[in-house]
Length: 109
Image (tube, rainbow, N blue to C red; front, top):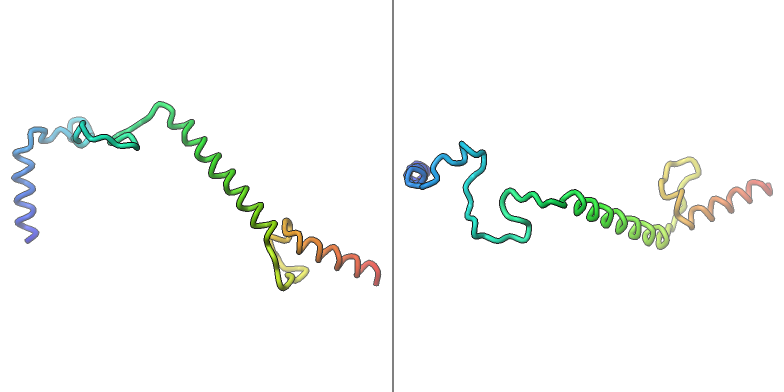
């Protein structure tokens, strides 16, 4: 079955009016009448750098907002060990308050 498909493909390529054009130009021939919101084949909009920067800043800003909401809503039923590495130790209010109380208790003792 694969042999028949290869034969048909070769026959169609031989009949194609743009046969071998992609070898001369480096680009595969494509229909010019097709519209695409992304710009179509080989699109290179003039302001792609600015659009990419704006999209990157938007995604970064959205990440900051989500991070702040997550840090504010974080709730731990069990506090981390004093010497263990927990990155959220630096921004979670609950852990910061717990460690402050632990230091006060050690200072009083």
